[in-house]
Amino acid sequence: MLTVMESQQPTHAKPRINGNELRQYERKAVTLVGRLQSQNGRDAVVVTPDGTEVKVLMGIGSTYSPVVEIHGTVDHAGGEWVLREESFVSFPEEFDLSLYGEFLTLAHTKFRDIFLA
Image (cartoon, rainbow, N blue to C red):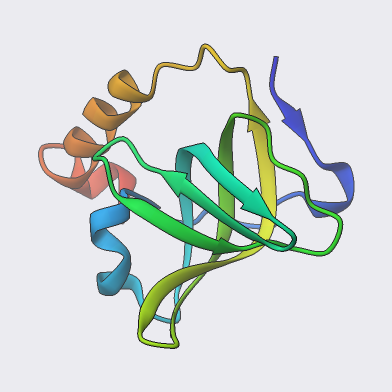
């Protein structure tokens, strides 16, 4: 079951990216899905399907599930690439990140005109 934080629902579509694509989207809104590796205060680290560790600057009051979809803006802060959360969706722990990674590959190659238009 997916849980959308009602007060933080995304307002428009954003490109779905993998962690290795962050620098291509500096200062742009994106959607990123990953497995929570750590969470400390308002900082979190998620691992994306391509194995990239992404630092997330969480919104006030946010608490992530083991698998999470984050809507936010890519920033280059303090010499590292980060995602500033605007909203998030909790995914069930059994969500297949490997299959989602295959989707991202197709969305950025063969079906680019559909997903990144």
